[in-house]
Image (cartoon, rainbow, N blue to C red; front, side):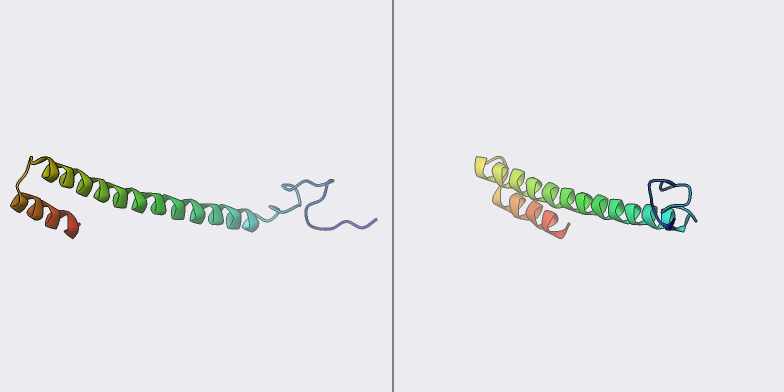
Length: 83
């Protein structure tokens, strides 16, 4: 009878299977951490872009409604463009 060292139905994945020496488990955890960090920073970057666009839209609406002058609109828009 031949037994392989990898995952099989007799040993499971934790006894002498895939996570046998611990290094494989560290690799899997590392990959999961890298993916989670990448997703976190992509979402965070996307939120700042949306926030900047919505601020510009609000400023434009104030100008269109006549709540602020053209000079104030241009000054505030320049500040938003710098960020």
